[in-house]
Image 1 (cartoon, rainbow, N blue to C red):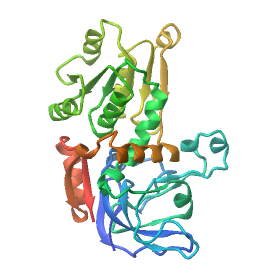
Image 2 (image 1 turned 90 degrees about the vertical axis):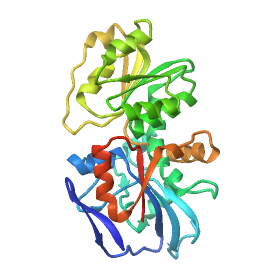
Image 3 (image 1 turned 45 degrees about the vertical axis):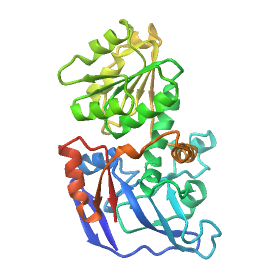
Amino acid sequence: MKAAMLYGVKDLKVEEVERPQIARNEVLVKIRAATTCGTDLKIFQRGYVKKVIKLPTVFGHEWAGDVVEVGDDLTWPKKGMRIRAGNSAPCLRCRMCQNGRYNLCEDMLWLWGAYAEYIRVPARTISVNTQEIPPHITYEEAAIAEPLACVLHGAEAAGIQLGDTVAIIGAGPIGLLHLLVAKKLGAASVIMSDLIDKRLEFAEKLGADARIHAKTEDTVARIKALTDGYGADVVIEAIGLPATWEQALRMVCKGGSVLEFGGCPPGTEISLNAELLHYGEVRVQGAFHATPHHFKKALNLITSGILDVKPLITRRMPLEKITEAFEILTTSKSDAKISIVP
């Protein structure tokens, strides 16, 4: 089969590789759509946490497709079924899992290989993090359940309340998903900050109440001006840079919440004012990945039409042009998600 193999930083090649062979309790899926992700872009540009991805590997993790082979010991899923699966499956046994923190599982099984014609889905992933796709939604929409699941986990951690003012740093795909979720959770106002005009225009079309061009405006001052000097109730950092992590802390009101969602490179350190946390009672929360519950909830939100993720697919490209797709995401920054169609 054809597959995009990642060998190292910026070393991605579409090659002919062996089609995966399945065991008695696994399935083989023909991928119909795989969507690009900011995490993929970070891995491509700078590498990633070694316990999550081991090189070389078939790349990509947001996908949906058709079951074409079923192991002898399985009664579900069935051959011909449209499915999507999460890129992780917790062990359910470790201390983190026993405490309900499935996204922090100490023995997580990671599933990579979306940018290919076929993917093998392991038994554990089938049992804890695989869903059937209803016929009325597209494969692309179903694939977006993966990043949406992560955003749902983050939104829960941020504690967005009815009537809140929410500020989001970064109007890329993840920032836009945070925008959609915040509006559905009842945020009275969502303010988007970014460096790219087209991204901010896109955010406004999706429901942003105000936009801040971070290249020409003082983002912190503008947030304070829009909130009568107080700051936002919830600030979400959706980029993953030390500077914007620190900026988020200067944008929040007393008693507010800061969600540091964007992942910085391992070993990154930031500075913060202890007075803010102590006297201002500001809560600072990280959010990593998602749980199987969030994956199921994400697909349900897409399936029901409560969240419309179709506008996030701004381009479709064949597998052979995967490197060109990453070039576009790196240079133009006007595309949200590109659907890779094997």
